[in-house]
Image 1 (cartoon, rainbow, N blue to C red):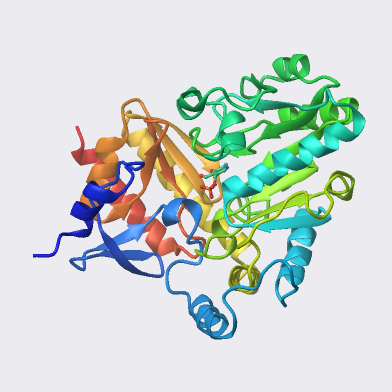
Image 2: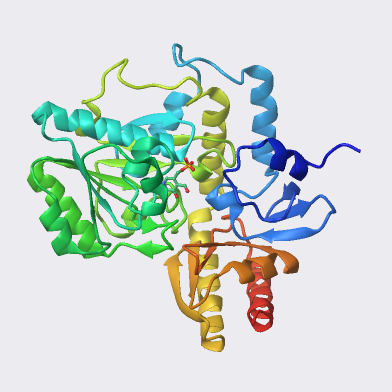
Length: 395
Ligand SMILES: Cc1ncc(COP(=O)(O)O)c(C=O)c1O
C-alpha cells in the first residue's frame, strides 16, 4: 500500500506546520473540495491569496498560454510584462518605482534594505527602525527582526540590530521612539496575524509627520490588507496618508507566488543596479497573471463589490455578536473581518471544517475571515447561517 500524503509528510517534511486534518484537492470559485469530494466554502482564500477564487477562466487561460511561451526569463533581460506591471502598481499606489519578487517576506526584506540604504546616505548612524508591537512582517531574518511578537522573533535571536517596538496606536510612544537615527517607521495599516487591528488615522498621520521631521521613510506593509481587501486599492487610501514605501503580495498574481515593493522616487534613488535582485521574481508568468488580476478587478468592479459584500458580512457578524456573548468584538473593513472571542477559537474552526466552512483563528481567540473578492451575497448569507449553527453547537 503506498503511503498517504499525510504519512509521507509526517515522516519526511520539516515539521513547520501544525496542519488542519484536511487534504484539499481542487477548487472552483469560492469552493474547495477535499479528496472525498466534500465541499467547503472558502472564507480564508489560502490566507488572503486566491482572491479571484479557484479556476478563474482568465487565470487558467493566461497560465496555459504563458507556460507554452516562456515560464521564466532572467532579470538579465527584458520581457513584455514586468514594465507594464510596475507601471500599473505605481499608478494604483501613487508611488514611483516597483521591485517585483516572489513573496510577501521578500517584498518586506527589500523595503528594509532600501530604507537602510536611504538612511546611510545621510549618516552611518541612521539605520534604526521603529516597528509596532503585535506586528507581523514575514519569516526571513529581517522580517522576523521587525516583527513585534516574541514568539516569532525570540527563537532566532540575536536578530538584526536597530529595531525599537512601540505599542499599537500609541502616538506618544511613537514620538518618543522616532529620532534622527531612524531610517524607517514600519507598520501594517491593519494588522493581520496580530488579530485584525486597524491603526487609527491620527496614529498614521503622526507617523507621517514624524518620518518627515526626522528624515525617515514611512514603510507600510500592505501584504495582507492591501490590493483591494478593504474596498480600496490600499489600506492607507482609507486614511489619506501617503507612505514612502509599500509592500504587497498575497493576491497579486491570483494564487501564483508574487510580491512587490513600491517606493517613492526619493526613496528609490538609494538603490542602484547590483544592490538587490532575485532569480525568479518578476518572471513573465507571475507578472502576466498579476496584470490579469488587476484587469479583472477593474473590469468586474470588484472594489465596489468588496465594500458591498464586506458590509453585509460585517452586519451578519454583528448580529451573531448580539446573539452569542462569546463574541467579544467584531472588527475589520471590506473583506478583512474578524470576530474576537472570549475563548480559544480552535473548536469553532474545527466545527467550521465539519460544517463545510473554512476560516482560521489567529492570535488564539480571533476568528479571521479573508474570503475571495468574488464571494457573492448569497454565499456570505450562507456563511452567516453556518456560523450561526457553529456558535449554537460549540459549547
Ligand atoms: C502583513 C504581512 N506581512 C508579511 C507577510 C509575509 O508574507 P509571505 O508569507 O508571502 O512571505 C504576511 C503573511 O501573512 C503578512 O500578513
